[in-house]
Figure 1 (cartoon, rainbow, N blue to C red):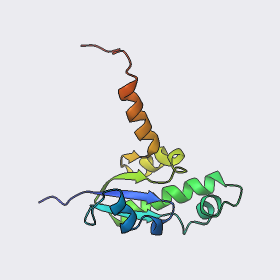
Figure 2: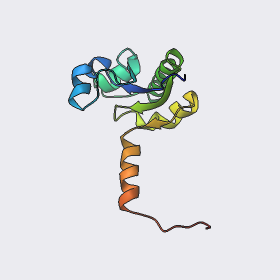
Figure 3: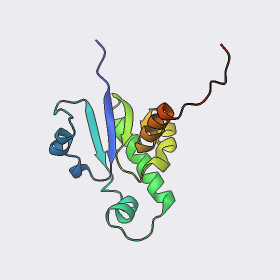
Length: 126
């Protein structure tokens, strides 16, 4: 029997994505998810959670990617990642390259909705 895959959720602050919040959006307590927060990363915490007024882009990228890698390393059953925080999509490609997992965020949701509303002409061979 194959183990069930899980969804890894990378969020700004893990305590904000507790069971009460998950239940409020219809996610069951036994849903196959694993959550990691960025609150322990000094660059991310200062720039995003504490609004220090500036951001070291390289440091934050490294922190976000390393947190995603650690999440997948600690939980190899993770089959895909979801970026909860709206400050994380710029790092989605780096996360995907580092983890080898599909990565979704609010940008992929917008792209998906847009592709259904504004169709392009088919430009291939049949």
